[in-house]
Image 1: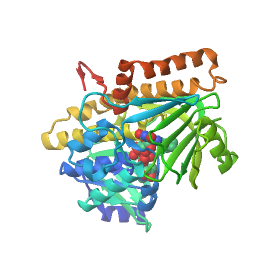
Image 2 (image 1 turned 135 degrees about the vertical axis):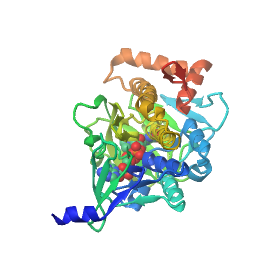
Image 3 (image 1 turned 90 degrees about the vertical axis):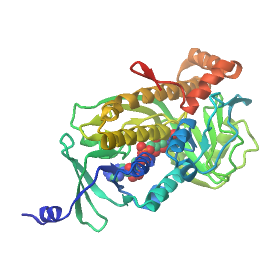
Image 4 (image 1 turned 120 degrees about the vertical axis):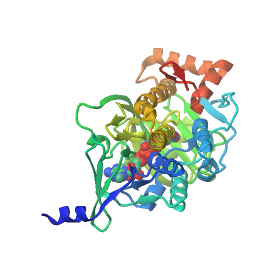
Length: 410
Ligand code: RFL
């Protein structure tokens, strides 16, 4: 017998759910399971400090605020960062304010940077006695199609550990090991590449009065708040561009031109990277006792702010499904998990795709041509003039438009 086998035999553990990954999806699953009295173990490969610093999304949509509210968690994990509910579209320097009021009452979206949400979810989970293991290396999944899957990993000091469980929540993002553990041929990947790159810049610079989207022949740009003294900017660029080609002076010059704001105040740039705008859906979001949650199952191009919000939606459905299965022996939620998630995923993909095409094609017509530019401008005009168009847009932004499930809507 090898030393490794002996060590694994000496230290078997057992829990109900092993959660892989401590991003927004994994931490939400863990908190909701804990609130339901269901034991789980979270395995995260990074350190707590590293996870707490990852800056991406900035707004928790109204639907997700309601979800946290329904679990009694909204004030603890979201803070009180509200905004006035207006979005600014600046087209060739002309400003148009669009309200995100969807007209159905109830809580509105909250300004809550992703890293703040992650920090608060972590703190609440640990304060309530949750089991969260950072620096878990070489995580591997076994017997996913059986009754009791096993998860193996290596601790920070090199010891091998093994946990038996009833379910695995694969919340480890697009590059994790969960989806990769599914045998070939089970999942279908539906992918789309917009052929567009974005330079994204974080800076300690004054945030805009409203989330700002700018359209012009110079290319798309955007400016969002990331706290009271911090901003995130986006600049359309070739997808194979390099951050080194964007020194500070070029970034601020391009922003002033595209945002049509000569007085834009610069600030120290704390992060700068380039990524491709792409979208990806994996179907189904389940294999045996493994359930894929969040980015592990789907990637949404950033316009519309749906990626993190979809992760929160999946997490809620999964936690409720496990609760019903364990507490009431009702597996309906588990059986319909993938289908229900995918309905909302495609709904949000369509919204994000529409917004991405509209805001890029309305500006620089070198990629899509003058006809597409005319169509995109017409769509924007409709948004600036029709009350019904604004209401439909606001409902999609809020994540509150009904989505069909069989003969039901939710
Ligand atoms: P995450 O956040 O990627 O977390 C996955 C976690 O799993 C860990 N992990 C592992 N742990 C153990 N073993 C392994 N083998 C592991 N492999 C990975 C990772 O360390 C990590 O901690 O996925 P999750 O939880 O599904 O959350 C998804 C969101 O992070 C993502 O959808 C959003 O950030 C997308 N996104 C935005 N979403 C919005 O809703 N609104 C936005 O405004 C918004 N802006 C953005 C974004 C994504 C961006 N990037 C990534 C291009 C802006 C940007 C720049």
